[in-house]
Length: 178
Length: 132
Image (cartoon, rainbow over all chains, first blue to last red; front, side):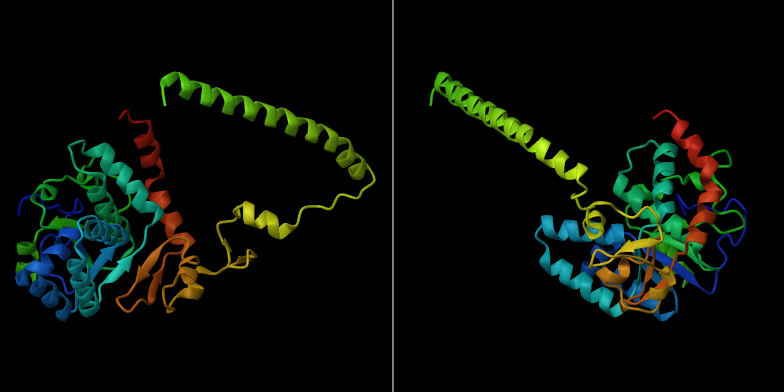
């Protein structure tokens, strides 16, 4: 379970919870086009009553790639997947901008700002959500190694005080949870 | 076209532009006394408020610009349960969540935004002071 972010408060840990909110990375949506394994995972999540969430920045990245790489078929397929699975869509918060800046200052390795923005949406919205446990689901291995400032005792702010931190996870982790 | 001819062409355009600028300045100088005279006689109309609304964005974050350029106070929660459109999106001043059917299912309030801000305000100041 490399790269997973445990809650600094030591709350839920990895225990199974009744409700999960899974924020999807753009690559998960693209994988769902080619891989039935990925698509089935998303279906299982939805059927089990968990929430799938797509941020405006992820939608933007999907659209950008489909336009610039001339992938109309993928765009239609992703649109159909969204129509079937009916994820929630989240818009920017003031907090997401702050979280992006914070991640930028904290981890100076070569993570691109688009990925940081996706994760910032997850952090900002997770801090507002109810008791659901939140995850950022990606298939990018390098993202699994990203450290969130929120887990650093000397760097974190009070946004997740008393709350469970979202985690960056890959498909296998989610598969084990449902 | 050779380099010299090209420079000559640019120079002649520049000269024409300068002549035009001088003529315009002269016309404005002629116009100014007439405008001042009308102003002193109280004949100048105040600018149309609707025109100002087109230029200036409202300062109050609870104000929104509608399609008719009128500024109205809006309760962000008023769009809860409505379809997400360009119009309803304008009411989601602090962000929110739209479900898979395109319905606004959560609107973040100013209070929620303020709470988040409070939780990391000092942290942000420290971040900004941090060298890149």
